[in-house]
Image 1 (tube, rainbow, N blue to C red):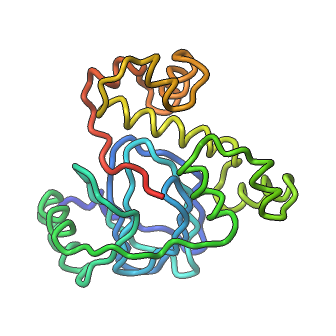
Image 2: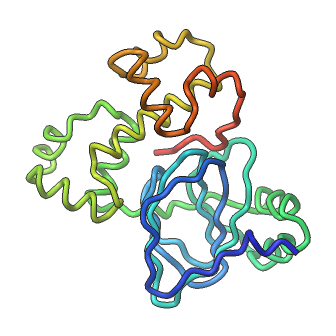
Image 3: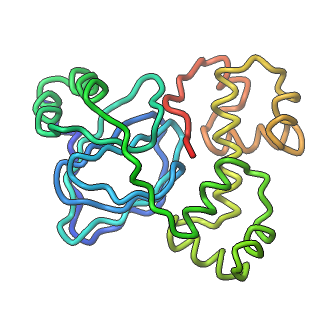
Length: 228
C-alpha cells in the first residue's frame, strides 16, 4: 500500500510557494484549497485535478475543512491545467494497489475543466505566461492600477513578485525548449528573449539545478508544458 502519495493538509493551513522537479497530477479527494502557480490560480474541490509540469512552482491555501489530496506521477503531456474525474474514489483505490495503475485510470477518465480564477492578478499572470517580455508598468497603466498596487496584490495572490514570476516563466519556456528543440544554445537564448546565452544558462540552472547543455543531454522529460 503506497500511502506516501496521499497527502493530508491541515484546515486553514498554507503552503508557501515551492517547486517540484517532476510532473504530477493532484486529485482532491476531500476538502479543498486555492492553488496559485505557473498555470494560473484555481479553487480546487473534491473530484477535481490540478496538473503540474516539471520545475513549476505554486502556493496553496487550504480551506477550513483542510484537504486530502492524491498526488500521482505524470509522464507525457496533458493539454489542460485543470480537470475533473467522475469517480475519484476509484482512482484512490487503484493508488492503494499501484500508483501507475491509478495514474493510467486518471488519464482515461479525466476531462478538462475551466476552473481558473480571473481577478486582475490572474489576468496579469496569464499575460506573463504568454509573453514574458510584458512590461509591468505598461500593463499596470493599461489596467488602471498603480505599479505598487500591482506588485503588492500579485504577491498576495501568487506568493511571489510579478517580476520574479515573469523571470520564471521565461526560464520554464527555456527548460521545455531545451529538451524538444535542437537549436544552438545561443540562438535559443535569443529566440526566448534572454540577453545572451549566459543569461539563459543562469536562469535555467537556478530553476532546474542543471546547466542547459546537461539538461538537454539528459533527455529529461519535463512532462506537461505550462499552459495559459
